[in-house]
Length: 224
Length: 224
Image 1 (cartoon, rainbow over the protein chains, first blue to last red):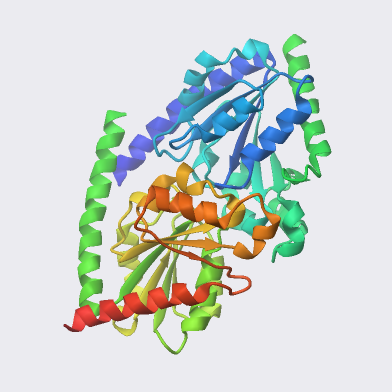
Image 2: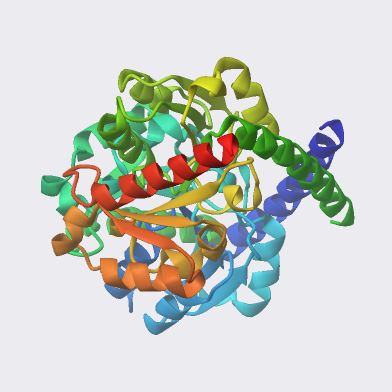
């Protein structure tokens, strides 16, 4: 057990150093970087597809997809007309900074306003791993229940944004978007919370305005 | 990297040895042991609550609950009138055999027909960890989409049963229970698949018959 802890510490320290250098490079280029974290099937890819569709021609986007084995998600994002790079973790349950560093060999961030990282579908593992992002965006799907922030607090404590997805299903569920929002804010009072549905498109305007504002701030800071 | 792999191997080898001795003990006692694996919010606890309600007075049940931090699920199971032991992993993403071994200090399996382990909500980490169970039961919630077996194949390859939950929501979803079933069987043709809803109670009879049959077989083998 002692040996295992020592190794984990080495790995996370190395990760923090590399994430810091990625963050400095993203700041220099003025690229907003968002790390999407959620359970499998919460709707990360569907939210990205609809966000890309709405922001096309307005912001230059690129996506790094993290998945244990397949390229299914990268295929969907590529189909939405945005450069996508797939990272397969071979069953690993989160992305690490060195994987982002390697993926950047295939995305020219000088040509990008917003770089979105879609992490592996997992509410536990990605929480403590810095990828050099500006913000982690945690997606909580209403059909998963309204207690998720209480049961998996780290993912919510480490995020700046909580997206409540699939709110169109609320009439058919034993779960409440208002309770989910309140539980998220209990765990992390600084969260910006947006309720939306990637299926119907409702609720996307305030979320996309958040992205626009943060991208403009990041760009302005780089050119100051 | 080399060092990390070596440690992981040590840990999983130790786990396999302990899981083997748990399995021998469960066989001697004639206790059926099921390990429930799923994403957060797929409905493992709700399925257990309804299964307990239906099997009460017929089979003696006990539950070991795995969660990263809270006792929310054990409280629900205890409320359903069944002995429940909570294991908190402190953020760890799966249970290990030594945790089951420790929990058994608080459950007398000599008095139990079916011991249910509810693993940490995670589709990746628990897959490779033997807990001495007779079967892993993977719960796939239809609102998560019908592609989960393709994206997280290990959880389905290591299971004997797939429960498709929340089928009452199918009319409102861009996902099909038939496609989810087919994708599960593509990844693992030996899966027993049951489609049900823990909210409405539909579809529970064939699943509960599976539990009854397997519990009777295990008991008979112990007394042979």
